[in-house]
Image (cartoon, rainbow, N blue to C red):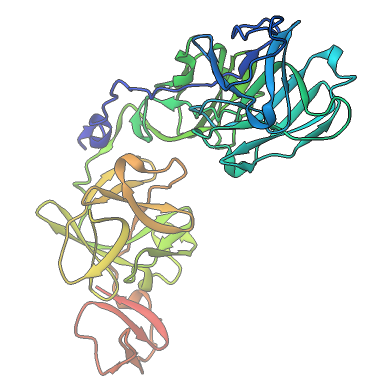
Length: 454
């Protein structure tokens, strides 16, 4: 018996992964308390503030203040921006991130007489709920359909009446990005079949951003979604047996902690020394069995599975579920109970067909003890998955898939089925046609029983 290493395992190559770039946006803060934008103070000569629309920037953030409606004005005084008159507005630039919330923080000493209403607008339409009255912090939750990047937000003063109506004393404006959806980390080893223990590197592109700290990966190998209470990794995970690997990343940026969604890979780990090439499989009748189920070899998009009892080489309702293997130049042809050839094509990675054109399958045993095998046609392996027999590309076989086992049928002929001395009265083919005698190999209904004639 010639020993060999699985052909599909030898062809696995792990390439250096090029991870995608990522960004996390910090809250944008306009600091009027320290007059970072250098807004002019009150003009004591002309007794007026600024009455024209002006734009200010510190090189990082910019803002436009427009008091021209109703002859308003604005100026810097004692740690706050003072802006007055209904219709006066503060125009924020278009941000390259989605905006979830805007806060306007007033001067603490001014709340006793700051009596105003203000709202946020995009294109002349309100996108939040107006804040009215005297308070220190006005919070504007932006409507979900108006949070996208590129919107120009205008904070517009309304009129609430009273002696000090329509006056704002602002120390800070804070623009909050919509909660950053931290992308799932990436594995450098793709799902597939591998020989022996493997090291899987997990990496988050976001961890490369300047200012990101406390990067920790968490993972599971049982297919469950990982949490920060699961196994930790510094970036390398060792896989020694078949599993479904899931991982998340937790990190800190700008004083905030982020937890990503999970990434998933499925690995089938084979032994270092695997079985022999299937040179000993002879032409004949076999059952394709996995997980206590036998493939029902009928035409269709899948091979339906039937639960069965396996006792040695015998299977319940044996005749109907048999397939026939015929040696080909390279591999084997597989026939169903109707004599049609079972095959699959590279054009569809899930479908199984039956037809008149023979297409060869290769059979490579992966386990000497139970004869489980890689049965492959056009690069697609026959597996048992989710209650049925299907085909998948070899490198994409899910970890939960079961490789089938071949069970041979003893070539003892019809006498093994019909009891001694029993008279054969009625013979039918599988199409229900009554025949006088059996002249060809195949499956027949004899005295109400399915009979395999070899």
